[in-house]
Image (cartoon, rainbow, N blue to C red; front, top):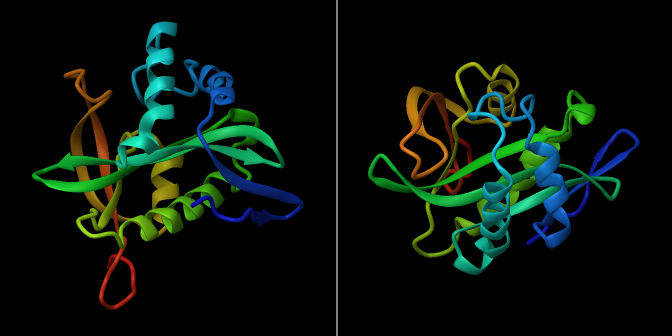
Length: 187
């Protein structure tokens, strides 16, 4: 299910399913700068619990977390997982790219690779047919990436993050249709 490496000028970007070795990446993502739009850094106990959930996610059949590799170095993460949203089952995605690697197109390559994976998964009987992203309304780079990847902006919403916390963040709801009779994306 892992896509072939994508090419950026002089770089190989690929997705690798989450592994024990990705815990260090999770710690590198857990900074004030990286988590400014999602409530700030988490304590180590929360990171370890998150890491265990990421490792177990594929066994649930509900999604997968990936490390984003640039030439064999972990430089970010991207995921999809199934969830209930406004009374329907959807896939949700989210991503991170470490600051030294931002602005190089890595998130766009990873996003396109993930969409390809989720389009395949969505062909299964009973699978959700849409992929949503919920970046904070103030996160201009992530909102621009959603547009670049072909998502349609449905508008702002209140979004609980982390799930089950009761904490709401003001987000934009972006959606892309995964499987359509016409073969096209949202319009």
